[in-house]
Amino acid sequence: MEPNTLYSVRMRASAGARHLSGAERIVPAVRVDETVNELVSRALEKGCRPDRLTVAVDALGPRPVWKLTSLDVVTLDVPDIPGSRLAASRILERAGVTGDAAKIAINLLANGPSASGGTMRGAMILDAVTGERLETDRERGVRASRFDWSDEASVKIISALSDAGLTHFRTREALALATKVSHAPGIVAELCWSDDPDYTAGYVSSPAMGYVRFPFLKQKGDKHGGRAFFVRHDGFQREVFIKYLQEEPVLVAYIGRCSRPTDPDEFLGRIR
Ligand code: WAQ
Ligand code: MG
Image: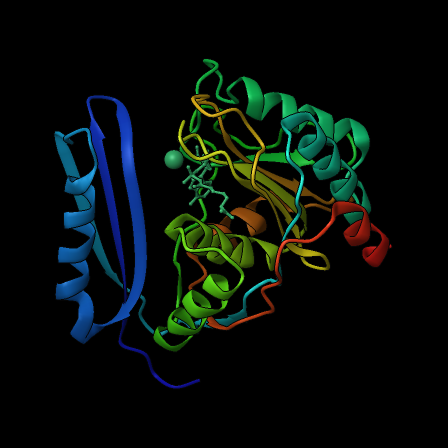
């Protein structure tokens, strides 16, 4: 592994106790400056003004950086929310999540998964068999950190996603996150939809099936959303899993396939 001079740059904006936005990058030393500026501008662009904006810059040091290939992306053309949630549940079952665990996760995301019934900053960890919640902090959840697209892969994925009709930055960021998560020790699958009331799309992903999007996993105007990481029932090591998600640096350096919207039954037939 070549010695690296990479830095993790993380931004977080809040108003009072409320989290407004966050983003992070992994960049070489020479790009730290412009990246800090870019993330600060982004935090200030948002409609609501933060009263605290934190940027952390950390050298990654001598640890190796994992170079991963992004998950294959497909969008399933399901026009309604109940149909999308049902198809998402079927796909989770194919990935090794029980119907019960999938249902628990969908209900939690739909109703606000935090202990107080609001959204979480991070993700829930759910036993893929029982649906039991395993994260230590149910208010905050666990956050995946230290991942980014490499410069080259970033250019390529923007073009590949755009060819598949996908141009929103959220898709690109969620794909990098899901790619890192799909390599976590003990992961079975992930379910996500945004807590942004204007963003109705979400996805299920797994190492074998890739990143499967749904344009409508929730109603427009609904402020509930979140993430569930489903993990192996047998021999799951929570500390190892969390340490990987939070600390191991990952660059998504190669891109997977990005397909045009597909009929859900055809997709389910194909992955059988
Ligand atoms: N690690 C773990 N969980 C996170 C992280 C993280 N780094 N960031 C966000 N979350 C959780 C948290 O509970 C948020 O409330 C929830 O996920 C949603 O976060 O078009 O935009 O940033 O293919 O609002 C999915 C579909 C978009 C994208 C997801 O998520 C597409 C999105 P958001
Ligand atoms: Mg959000």
